[in-house]
Amino acid sequence: MSEHPPRGFPPRTASYEADPEHVHRVLLLYSGGLDTSVMLKWIQESYDAKVVCLTVNLGQPGEDYEVIRAKALELGALDCHVVDAREEFAREYITPAIKANALYGGGYPLFTALGRPLIAKLAVEHARRSGCDTIAHGCTGKGNDQVRIEATVATLAPELKTIAPVRSWQMGREEEIAYAREHGIPIKTFSGQSGSGTVPYSIDDNLWGRSSEGRWIEDLEHAPEEDVFQLVTPPEQAPDKHQTVQVEFERGVPVGLDGERLELVELLERAAEIGARHGVGIVDHIEDRIVGLKVRDIYEAPAAAIILPAHRELEQLVGTIHQNQFKPQLDRQWAYLVYAGLWWEPLRCDLDVYMDSVNEQVTGTIGVKLYRGGARIVTRSSPNAVYDASLASFAQSGGLFSQTASPGFIELFSLQSRMAWRLRNRS
Ligand code: ARG
Image 1 (cartoon, rainbow, N blue to C red):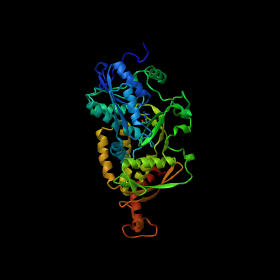
Image 2: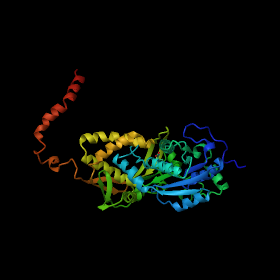
Image 3: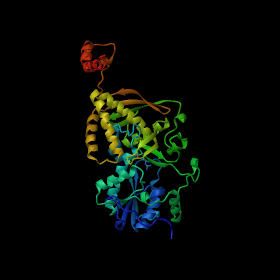
Image 4: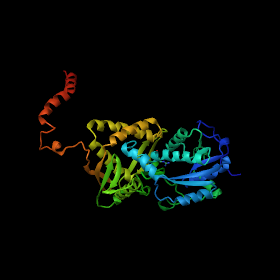
């Protein structure tokens, strides 16, 4: 008998984990890669269960969904649903992130963290529709994605259970490959720069960005090797010719590029393409995961590198000093909640009400100049700018602003600070 899969299941820890005896029909979140393909066979074998697959298109470039579907069916899936969720992802997940200027840890635009609750929500819908009792995903026990998926399933569908075979089966990559060979699972050969036999990077991508983990990335002293960049042109190789892109927003939502109105998905794809060409959006990020680990990720997020700074600039132009001081605190809380997998937490919805309210005014156009890895804001215009060129000008005085009022303001505004300074410097 084969060594794989290891028999016996680890004891359950959480209430939402499936009892192996009650696993009869499983909805598997299927990507077509090694882990989920091995899972597809392994679940049928180990649980004696039927498997229905779900593959979600969030705009990951270069996927052939027909090939993925055919592979799932060939490996014994009862069915493989392919859902194009790009529109919903852009509208319901990326849009609020833009309104919240969402960056975790100062640099990560959350594309994976935004995608997981949607993928898990779709898994719940399809599991219910296909009469499944259990949802299976391919996350490991070390990452944030397990948190995001399982928190979503447990929140939206208390009647459904989850299994996470990769977390428990204790097969390493070599054993998975051996299992795949034994079970006739086609494996991609990872040729190219890395050479065959080399472990590939662990990749996750969608419309809003791409992440790479593993290999030399785990060595903090190792500077990025160029083969990791599959989306963004390394800045050194980007054209020696700048381009300024005009990003138009209505109520905080990007609606046009360079004067052309575009549907959101197309706009994000086009922004990504322009940014990628100019080498923008590379982030080499050390990150505090929610499960305690500190990990390094290489991100490529060219659309976010254009749209987020443009949005923040416009928001600050139409906001008052008080709004502009306050909102970043809420933005940070929003990013943390979403990073941490608490998409369905009511605080996130409360924060969104505030984000929407502020973004009512965020209409206008920002010019972003792209050149060899840099994205710099060069022009701004908005009907709602709290800005009056004649007031701001050095030349003018009078009207709404009286320069002669300034000394009185300074005296009162600095009063407590002056008093305190004197007290501290008495001798
Ligand atoms: N560190 C990022 C996050 O936690 C990216 C994770 C990428 N996920 C993956 N399965 N490779 O959101």
